[in-house]
Length: 463
Image (cartoon, rainbow, N blue to C red; front, side, top):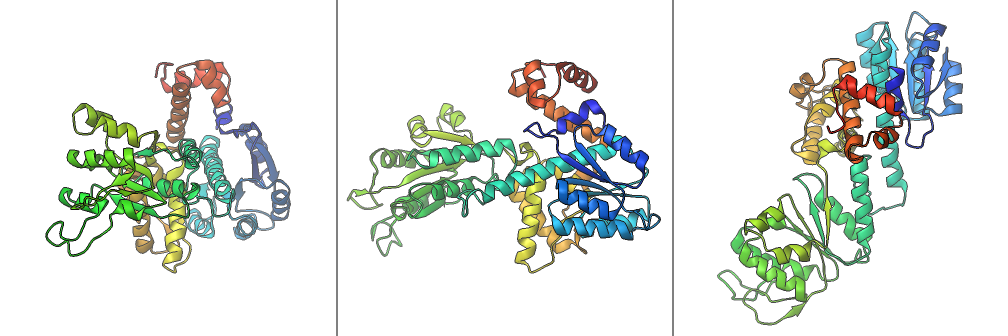
């Protein structure tokens, strides 16, 4: 990895992450130390020294040559070192590099828990890209573990993320939870709107009350009113007894109205009256029933456009959207696809009583390359499929049915790194309003370096 680009991998705190290089070629050791100046590189030439350095420095990422003394022409010492490191710290990202029986070694290394495999001779740029990706995944996983361990039984423990975009969403949910304002969750199907709604309820003073959810788009219009407001006996054919609606059942708790944009106009009027006055009348009834609930709504539709087209009441919109929270699609949550894939892999493998599976490098590349139009729901379904289809301990792109996505990814690691750098720079420029100085500070590089990288990527400040 070029020294000018490698600095993009520095931690947000400004401290250099530790990279442990286990390599008996002293010349290659020195070359890697010089090339990877974004990291604090510590080196070892044998298993004993490697384990001692690992215990002392606790690196997140390790590059490991399998051919170590006293078996430099074999792989026994390298695999023993790999197993020892992962036994001490299973979350460590170990990148195995070797020229010894590459295909068989790669299979065995991944099965044992290696993050990736690289065949010698070493290309500094390509190995540097793998190292950078390993640090990125390690940071995401560490952030997610920190969030889940922050408080036992955290209300948002079910939200698996390390992406800054989603962390901001979680922070916003926690901020509004203690109040009684109505919240509107905006996001595409499968982005986790109900998970966030449940987290909001658990974080609120109403946590001991019921959480009642109803999908307004899944119920026929002629039945939705009765489902929401309940009905009196004899109100219509088949109404053999008085029945409480979802609103009454949510008394003292939270009512979650999913796909609120699908409610027909006539029912919007009745829903608005309830939200304003906090009283309802059952279908066929005349008695006003007071109800104490908090309203949380969600939709994948553009309600403002629907208002302009006369399909949604503006006064209802302002009642349900005292606070609006936009949830980014999975494709915009950097690193989350792989993080969620590993989460679902552990979860569903354990549910099925199977052994713990691991994602192959090809599967990881395919997951990163896929656009995820179905968001988290699609990802979880593909992982369920892969657990059934996998013929060994490693999940492949074929098991995920993502071969086409894997084939359309950048051809070389250098091209993939260019894509990653381009995304980081464009995001920094967008956040800074096109300010080169501010973007360079965000990325942790100098203005001249940023200009050089932009020229090489064909970028202009207005991009």
